[in-house]
Amino acid sequence: MIQNVIIAGSGFAGLWAAIAAARAAHVAGKSDELAITVVSPVAELQIRPRLYEASLENMAPELGPLFTAVGVRHIAGRIETIDATGRQVTLALNNGSQATLPYDRLVLATGSQVLTPNVPGLAEYGFNVDQLQQAERLEQHLQSLASRPQSEARDTVVVVGAGFTGIETASDMPERLRAILGQDAKVRVLMLEHAPVVGPELGAGPRPVIEEALREIGVETYVSSGVSAIGPGGVVTSDGRTFAAATVIWTAGMRANPLAEQVGGEIDRFGRVHADPYLRAPAADGIYVSGDVARAATDNEGNVAAMSCQHALSLGRVAGYNAVAELVGLPLHAYSQPKYVTCLDLGPWGALYTEGWDRQVKLTREEGKALKRAINTEWIYPPAPDRDAAFAMARPDHVIVP
Image (cartoon, rainbow, N blue to C red; front, side, top):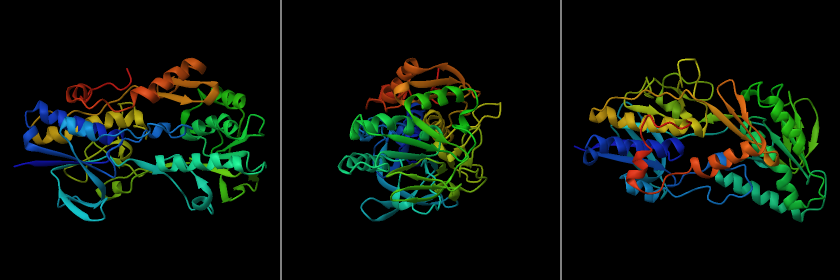
């Protein structure tokens, strides 16, 4: 009897969960006894960490040939409901129909989205770089600015949120705007952050370097300041200031996909399911959680996986392997990812590379930029559609950051 493993999502975690699951079935000699299916709207991997960039070429590499090579089926659609008791999922297919699929194991890897609170005008006038379609919409808008008469609003971009994505987006904007409006344009880029410091989650260690870089490239920062309203001509801050801006980019906060709430059990403040060491959802037998929907300990020191590509790559491998291992009798593998690094793009200044949860600065400027280029253009892309090559990189103990 065929056993069904369903993987919800084809992002970084979902992709590697699928390959790792297929590898585990192969290792156990049970490939013919398992059906591994990925459900996502399109068989592609959006390179989400790069969507702040101006050029959006090759930001969604196709996964169909890779799935075929490793023996994974893809269904174009979205999972709408999870019936954990009946072990089945209901799908809304791309063709407009619905379907129900049974599962023996389900890996939830549906990712996250930018948190969009009920700020007046955000839906109508705000932009974001959360998904490729939104990044393309922003780029079209920026290009259209060249046809407008010069004004303070035309030449100003406000980035809301000074976290990782906000800093990278803002750092790219001065050069990006000048390339569109001309080198003599009076470009102004402002970054608003509700916390009292820039990059609050990045810690105090690298902050002086980040602040130096932002000053050098001409990004203004306003901290302890939220947004109360957005209009066609700018923003009003929570403390009553008004900034004229034709472009407002929202990067403030992330939230796990709402399907995580259907799994049950304990949910953290980001909407993630608390996972056990093997990435099982404790309240739903047969369900594994991975990537941005999983709250998982990375080590024994109290650190928890970030909602990041870096952690999703490993979480996916472990969840996919364990989902199949549990069915075919292989030993389970506990998730562990003790080494943590960050590599923050700071536009023409370069990039900042840190190591450890205390974020010790290791590389800056062009040295950091060279590493960032390698990460963004090589390391995070999917492997070639070659089964043996893909399986060689899909072990659950594969080290993401050496």
